[in-house]
Length: 86
Picture (tube, rainbow, N blue to C red):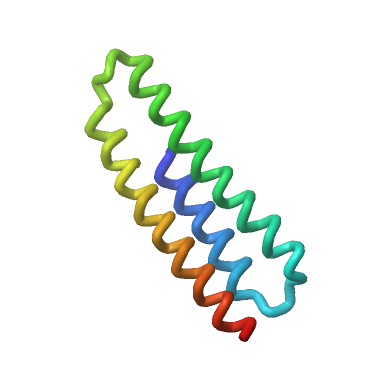
């Protein structure tokens, strides 16, 4: 479930950054929402794993890695957006 939420957040971010019809205000709101969703999903998965006695630590580690990839993708998209503005 967490992975699908993180993927959806990434898609929202991608659409926000690629769309040329959105005002910058909306793009900014969508970027913040995407980051918040990703962070919230990661925190919830961490709490669930710890609540079960730590049995799901492998899954948690996988989610952390995926979250890092999403953050890197987000940074890359921000750079692309800045390049398009210039």
